[in-house]
Image (cartoon, rainbow, N blue to C red; front, side, top):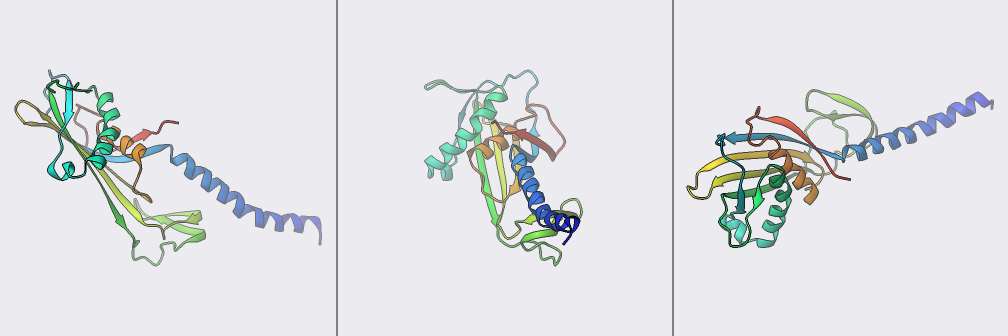
Length: 207
């Protein structure tokens, strides 16, 4: 066997491994940012400053205090970035803030003979924005999660809703505290300016 033939065979074995490494590296790089579809509504008074706030819990949230506290903690940094400050103990807040989140799991993928069923090779990576093809590993056998967070700001004195925002995305996990925090940040990114609904907002994760 001559040397060129041996080199070609070695490349035939090494190429998939190299492409797999590149694919995995690209996937890890993608985890450094979170993209969400955001919609916001309301007519925040032009002369009103963000002011102080306190969280308001619905009865269903009061029945799950630990889970609700984690959700509120995930929203605190986004509220601070938007100019709000948590009311001190015993202080009357200017605003009441309600936060919510949901994650819906889907086990079955699209009923499509072209959808990749797992493994390594050339496959269609998604129906969004038209067919797109890629060479690499497929994970379509994993469950899919549709995630959403919501924020409602109300004037404490009158009870009037002033501003509402929602952020949604999807992925292969329910999401952790860092993901929720990034989604809340996306939801409040343009406060108090109105924007195109829905709009894509990308938040870079720390670290």
